[in-house]
Image (tube, rainbow, N blue to C red):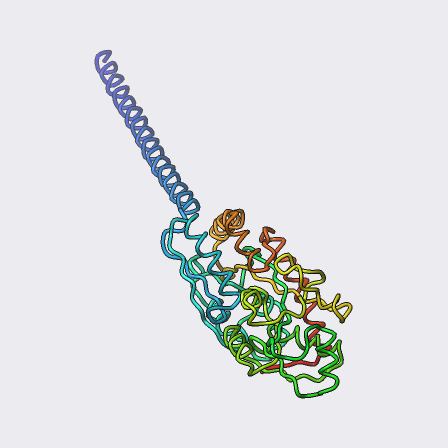
Amino acid sequence: MTYKYEKNTIQKNQIAGNKSVNTMFLKMRRQAIIFSSISLFAAHAMYSNHSLAQAKTEVYPKRTINIIVPYPPGGTTDILARIVANQLATVSGQSVIVQNKAGAGGNVGAAIAAKSMADGYTLFLGTVGTQAINYWLYKNLTYNPNTDFAPIAKIAAVPNLLVSNPKEPYTSVSELIGYAKKHPGTLNFASAGTGGSTHLAGELFKSMAQIDIKHIPYKGSSAVVSDLIGGQVQITFDNLPSVIQHVKAGKLRALGVTSGSRSAALPETPSIAEAGLPGYEVMSWFGLFAPAQTPPEVKLQIELLLKKVMSSKDVVEKIQEQGGEPSSISSVEFGKFIEQENKKWKKVIETSGAQLD
């Protein structure tokens, strides 16, 4: 009996021991599975974070950058775009191509740029016209300058220049105003396009001087300059870079700059305010924009590249040679500046009653 009892006790203990071992084994197995799952999750998270970090620090640019210019070749917007494009190619190590998409006072090119892929490889050289005037002037814009674009960098501010054919009988602003009052409706003033700063500069001059002169709109500055030299039109208000070389060559006569003071590029030419129309002042400006949905990290990289471009002595000198004032304000400051310009031109256009389809 004692043997049987001991044998049974031993068997029970063996069974209990086996259960304990099995339980311990199962616990260890579960722990191993859990540890393995955690390790796999951690590895996946590390890989995902690494991939995300790589994406965020992706080198930009990796291929050709396109800059859309909403006016024909030869005008101020085109000249400034090519100055910037050449230096941007140097600092980025990639080709930069300027594409001229002219028409409808800059609206054609702006609409194309607004609908471009928002990846940083299509930029837009916007102006006071496309970004602050046209929104209030045109009834049926196919883009919204306030929501379709992200401001990146202001490139330059440029005064317009009132110029005439040198064969005309007036040689100053006061003489021009006097002639126009004696011969109402006989003088034509040309502009690079209806609604642009060169057009509104003329309308403001006409209103303040209380004269009757007829507006002749063109599709771009080059055609204006050609016809002005040829005598088909008598005067124009054009961006200084577009006409300064013709003035220096004697092909055109400078009557006055539209800035509040004289331009360093033409120090002998008075401002229009100084020469006979106190209070008159109009400045054009130009800047680079990206489609609004461009990723923030890409916009930042573009802005950093443009800071390098605008810090180039060669770029600064070339802009100044064209009569422009180089700018280096941040994208945030540029955005605030555009808001103020919209308020200014909204008031001017509402007061003038100008409206286009």
